[in-house]
Length: 473
Image (cartoon, rainbow, N blue to C red; front, side, top):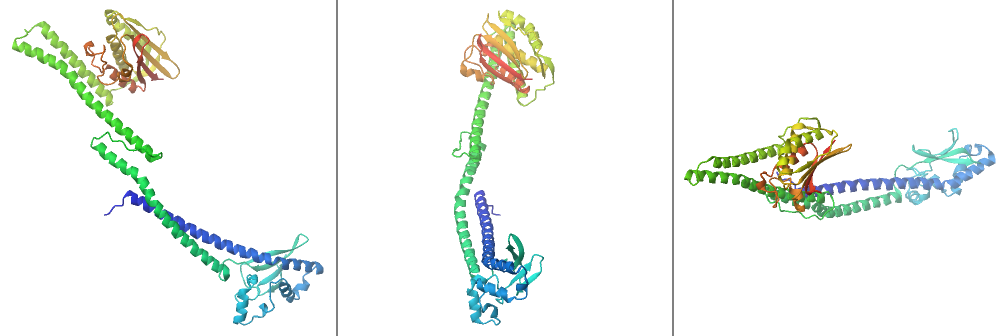
């Protein structure tokens, strides 16, 4: 089965919609013109009767009754004749002769008063609804015009009310208008078709570009960028697509760098172990306690790296479990500092934490302890002996901020945003020789994210790095 392209569907939709709209508009315009013509004719005939109505009102004032008209219907014909509403032979056309027919067709001033037999159709009715005089009353649809005397209605003139136009030059005019409307509608529809095709192309072109771009993404080509030359929703979609392509490209680069870093981190201790074992097997190095302890250190380092990778992987896939309860963050910090005091003393580090008030928060006690372990380990490992470490907690109604600062060495500006990346180390002092796996801060970041907080790195006033952890209360 042949499937229409979206461009053809859009073109047909616009064209059909235009045809329907134009057809409805033509019908409404034709009805409006016809209705307006009928109203105009009715009003015109009513206006032509006003002199007759004025004369009837004047004569009524002379007699103060309707006897003069009720007993002599010919008076009404005389009044109509005097006001050019009736000719002498109009009421005498008893036979349908051509001369009479031609005369009546040309007498446009009396169309409302003549029926198909061309006799005047008019009646005078008093205020109580009684007929005073009537001439050939036949039409069912009628309208009444008031006869007023000194501001009061004394009677009504009842004449036919035209509901449609069936003859005369008005009918010819309407036929001409109908033809003109349909010709104009055909022209408008043709113009709509001419405009609809490029318009459909204009809307479909970005969709085709997005389709091609999506095909490139499925093939792993993330460097493609779509042109952005629109300010509508399709332009925004193109911008979002480009951002997606950039993100995928960055993720692909991160994945490759991650694999390379993991390979390097695992290869180093394995190479050392392999070298020492081969040396012992070949007799180059005797089997001794010192050699075994060296190999044990490499195994321990390898085990720690694998454990950190496992923890980080669990955090990434949501495997870290959180059992939250109300804890005192300040008390946890004091407990950790007491436990790490021997290590601080060994490196001659000065540690300060002056918060004595409780800082209660809703968190997982085990994960917060893990967070503090990693932060303190990172601080003492990458601080020169004799340096300083400062911890502080700031609290308000909405947030709790834990700040861990250390002294020199610091890191470059461009390295601050990368400290939480996998296996990232700066080129200077924060390197593998200090025993870290490069995953501690990355794990911290995942723990903080799991608590709905944020974690950033900045330069410390002590000369090193300040890690700012912010939790929402």
